[in-house]
Length: 107
Image (cartoon, rainbow, N blue to C red; front, top):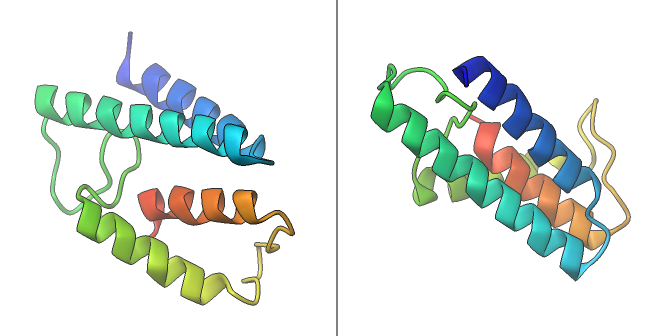
């Protein structure tokens, strides 16, 4: 399986799981998919290391827990009032899923 296919499939699964978050059960499913995405990223990077100055094979900008949490916090601070292309959801489970999802890609 090509890295491009894996990336597209993992992104589809991750976005689908995030979009389905409405309650605790669906949030837990999202966390499991996010975790699987991170582990797939680490396996791909172990097999084919990339530049430390670019996103990982599956788009992870933040490869350790500290950077991930810091990026999540920065994004949530910047999105409190809804940035231009983001509408803050009414459902708190979905809001938390968005925050964690952005920890993956926010620089």
